[in-house]
Image (spheres, rainbow, N blue to C red):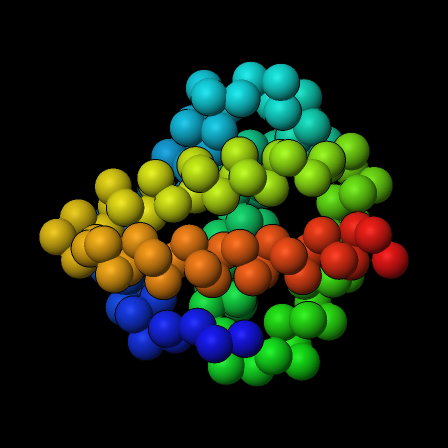
Length: 135
């Protein structure tokens, strides 16, 4: 996986600093744009769900240079999400909302280059999850 890890890390850091509610904003976008997915998130309290996503994002960003960790972790996560009823098109929805939330939170740190780096990274990472779901 050939990702622009330094740009992804810097924009993620800027987004986290500028918007401590980054994850909550992501969920607001997701549930507004795709309300049909909201029932899928009822197994956890909203704060717990947000914390799990925040921890997952941090872990993935921290491991961008570790292809083995990414493959093993994200394939397993994809299998787990299959059990939750996640369908392949939903990965596009999540990516759309995640990138929008990141762009908003990163403010001036976001650029066309950052958008491209994040898009490529998200597609690669979602691809690993989809592979896990199909295994």
